[in-house]
Image (cartoon, rainbow, N blue to C red; front, top):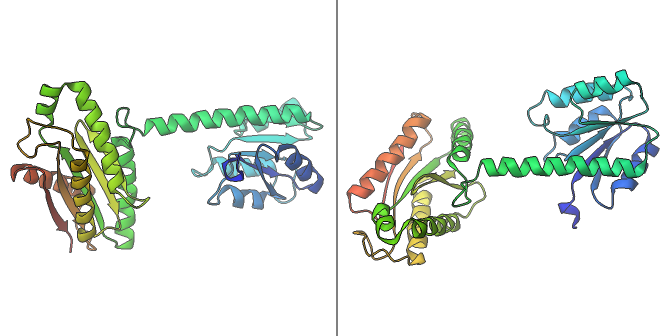
Length: 306
């Protein structure tokens, strides 16, 4: 396994020898990150690369382990990081207190190295399973792209960021043309396959990590384009039309094209914040309706707040 693929284990202890022993024990399977005190532990936990699990000593100067865990559990960014206490405090009361504060496990010194490794492995397996479940909650079951729930969460964050920074922001509603007729004549199984292919085509039309495509419902998709002005958004929409056309999915019952095509309603938020998130989405939906009304297989866009 490459170093970047290894789980990150934050080991917190004020004794240098204790840090070395645990780091040597875990370094073959994981990436140890070391902290000599509570302040360093919090810095690592709040960094851009937070740990997957924390091994935390209780007795440390200035900020002890109990204070560290309270701080971590009260922060939305860190409250889900599992914490195992590794300490010389071995009374039932100490263990109960640690678990009540949110630790997932409590290991007393002197400890058995194989037991430490097994407990770390078990808790990381649980973390991995939770992450998978969390990812599934934001994926559309058919197309395996983001679902509407994921779109709505990202949309609110990007809208707020655009309003705060005064940056442009674009949104595109994409609808498959004459999809009912496609399902009626080719069958719903073929319709599902077509939606999967279209979802991949729309993903390929996006070129930046911040851009998002999600299934909005049925045969409708939505594109979220942060920091994208009207001209750049129109270029993305054109790529969407072309990528779908390149699929060459036959659609003899379409009045828009010989193969499956899409219509796009595009809206861009200018630097003046005069629209609400709800009206912004409604504007994109209105433009999508106009694109359909004007013959489909086309883009209709507008700018709000110049």
